[in-house]
Amino acid sequence: MTDAIYAPPKAEVTAPIGDVPRYYAVAPYKFMLLSILTFGLYFVYWFYRNWRQIKIVDNEDTWPPARGFFYIFFTHSLLADVDANFVSQGRTYEWKPTLIATVFVILTLASNFMSRIFDVDTMSIWLDLSIMVIPIVLASILLVAQKAINDALNDVGGLANASLTAANWVWLVLGGLLWLGNIFSAYAVYVNPELLAP
Image (tube, rainbow, N blue to C red; front, side, top):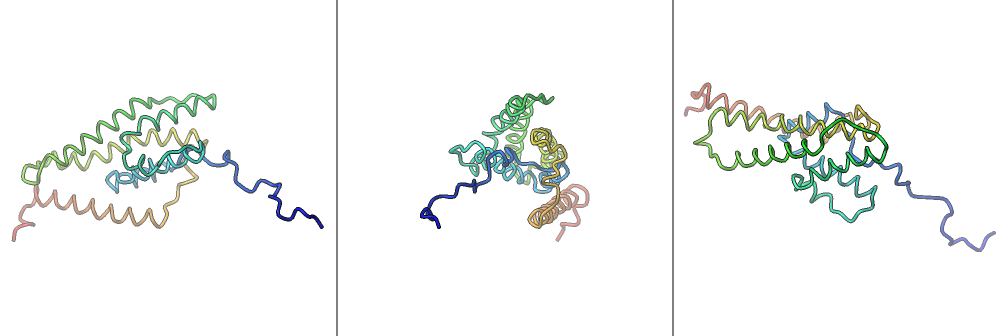
């Protein structure tokens, strides 16, 4: 019998950092569904998860929830990190991270600006439609970054996160109902106003 019963174990009991993915893999179809049906609300979670993974791998003193919520201030740095990761792997990936981040941020700010300066009385059908189309455009732009992330993780199809969870379905149903409400509202206001008549 040994006297060192209180000695720390000699075997490694924690998962090595190398086993933790640096970024958040998502299948492209899942990324698009969640981004569009939640009107871009999914972006907050997406940025949070990516920064959380980076924090774990780099053991940095950062706060991923803030970087997720205020993602427009951290879009460039996230995509730059992904690009630098390809370099560190000795690989090249054909994309323009700075341009993608800049266009994404500008369109996000424009979308927020439009939705705040126009009230219901001054809305036109084109403005209404643009507000509904912008989430699709933003998701398409950020999808390029998601594909780069999947490639950096050697998971091109995002198979590690391809299935829809119960929480995903809740968001998809709620978002789908919101989309139907917006479409019906636009139809009733611009095409068939008598639907709203008392």
